[in-house]
Length: 630
Ligand SMILES: [Zn+2]
Image 1 (cartoon, rainbow, N blue to C red):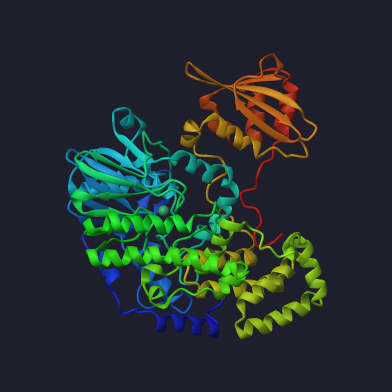
Image 2: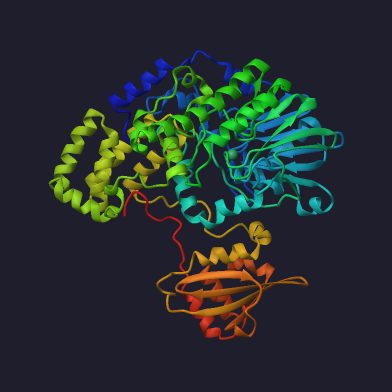
């Protein structure tokens, strides 16, 4: 790792002079109502080692070092504040114990847990901290604001499936389970690899490495689970009384998550805007990848909340970061958040209508001066340049409309031609060095990417590209950009990191509630099309769950797997029978399925060889596929 380049020093100095670092209100708010915490927020992992600890982030004190954008440094310090906080009477939050916050509402007989964090250990530790200070109140309900894992994965740390059986309500927005499945299962493999870049998971903390994730300090590690909602909120607004607490739900589908909802607690004069109004500019498409989000809907729901809820609100809380107190400030905050997404949306559409394409819009679009000076609009997680691309794609898809980009050579072939046209890799590296010295880091990584894709073994190209990526990381205000750039540098220098978190199989809890049709989708995307193109087969697959039998008919033809509930009857080539309990093991993929067939754990009657041929056509995926090299 190299120190900050003079041009990086200048860029970071500019940020320091442009923003009002004397404004300390956010630090006061982030500490307001502090009740207590545990040392360094240290949480051991059930499987051994550390689940969560802020100790390695002790370096985050004082002024920003040269290698961190000062604005991001400020957010990194705010996200290092941890503990149990009183938000208002009956409302508490544990912050800094996980990427997200858990909100705890005291009902008449027990507590309502809003968003039980990402990992079992995090949620359990947060609940224990709360109980240490507020007494051993029972959990009477769990509410998920939305279908992202950092808000529900730790649910087993606060309730068990037996608790649900005994009457603990689990409430979520309509589409919760489907939203969670589509995001984490079908596109799960590339999403997890890309998430490594977004969150900087495998990077060590340090002023030249990981400082933050924007939404919170880090991801952490631990056990996770899935308990599906027993009650869904379906109407645009719904009012319910839960353990004496009146809650008005506002559904906000298509915003930060496909299934999400805000909540107003009128008697407590508190408004919970879920993840729709965190203390930053959010993503309209995260760097890990997702279906693009609807900026217009996002702005509209915030506008409704401003009109309907804010007049009866004294404190605004969100499921990341700290609350905002005082009606005037809340109104300014919600209006500012609304205007930010509305502005991004409308201005991108305006520039699109002038014929501009995503990269051109990104270079041109500036946020209005007053709004961009507000700390809560800064791009610690999202970024203007990336969000305009997401809005463009939301309306027009990934193609920019220029036929030169309709069918370009793929990266490796194009790279070979670029290198040839540009006079060979040595000439490119020489010129790139001059541009590096001048601080043109964006161009250096763009040009050297061709050299690395043409010849991944070219050491000098990898090193110089890594140097430039590092400087881009040091300058980034967005934590997700910083993490991406710094991991790119690291993978160019030392090849792929060995510290990939987790495997590719799905959590057993998820498989346990997964509709079998979704499991078949999971298999369908593993069919190697060309390998299977001559395979024509009809299978019935029976899933036995106690006394219930769920039968699906699978048709394989032209390398495609289609399926429907029901049976092929006597036209089935083979009938497969499994128990529901086997599915978690089988979800590991081809090897597990073939092993189960060999051991007779997959009960197959009929043409067993044909079924085996089908299993043999399935691909297995490398969760650490290459990103910065071919
Ligand atoms: Zn979140």
